Image: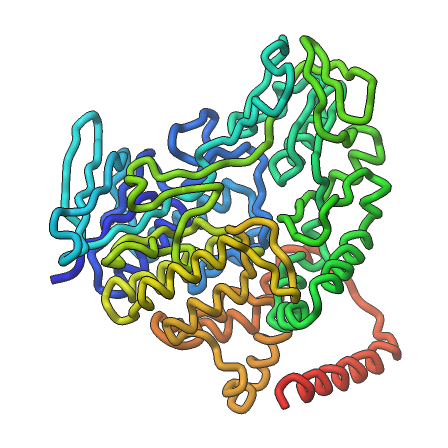
Length: 532
């Protein structure tokens, strides 16, 4: 009899979890509290409780080739960075292609997930749900939690002196939908993450004045990277990753700073990060420097005091009149349907082995998918997590002893820098390629570059030097996809198809052939040094 698996949430990770369960012969039932799939990517004009909220203009920060499911590329005619409406359509295509909808119960809230009395033997869970006011209970052999971490807004009012005296309007960025509300207003956005920067830029088109307050600064980069390529197709390669991880952290930090400042000098714009040793998530915004240089957005330090109709910033005695304050201060996450004895969230992290399994449970039958912040796309990350989880649930893959898992969890929490490669500032942040490869190795799905170099050198070189697209994760092992090789070799064709909408006749240059020859020689030398 197939094991019954309860899946909480029908967002990007929930859909991948359903598909992975079906592929391994498990029986998934997905509970989605709203009336449609998509999670974060489904825009609504109102905020729904317990579901991530986005504003109408949201566009993906990871390009389509890097952020697709590993065996389901985006349509060729989609732009490289996908607006939320098209992203939702892609998710619906995915659900229809793999018949996932029949496994989803919409408008069904998960109220409680508790261990059965014989849990130490069976590993089973009792799941209590509510639909149209009626509660039901069912027993499941396993549970996969796919609720994400963008549902509980963090609103640090206690750290903003005088906020209670403010007579204007203030709210968390979760409530923001359209820039119309800022028309002819003086707006302050607190927090310089991706959302805060997007909101400040959008507000600048209609507001009287816009301030963006940041405590620590941030690196700002464009989606359009070297030679017009998508940023992550250049940055996220196995070669680049190996190169970065082999260098001492101070050198990597210097290289990152040099690259970020090649677009514009962050110090001259008041943006340079105070702590450049630890890497926080870079801000992706194509317009911010232009808004700053034209005076549409003014960068300010942290807030000293809020008054009835104005704000005083640290190190600047002048009061600035303000009508609206937007707190783009991020989120905390929690699992209200789980007891703290199962998963306890402390200081923005939980004791999860590989960011997935509660390390202390005697039976590995509960998994948390997608509560991680890799420097890469969440879709292939959550999908790879789910591929490993279902094999653990089936008993094909075994977890190490509890003591080993707890030791690794504690090491991740301490977040001690290794001295090499990038140093991440938060425990949930991790190296995308290294983490994915750990999981792929567990299920024997990591591509073997040495073997491929002998049997398919073109593919091996593309995998190593080219973008680490998710198709690489389907070349071998369980869930192997026969279209993976072709998808890898044609990834740049799909990237340029939507930008080359006007045919341009290029005049051949005598230097081009020489440059290609030199590049080939350099490539061969790199291969010799790396593989031999």
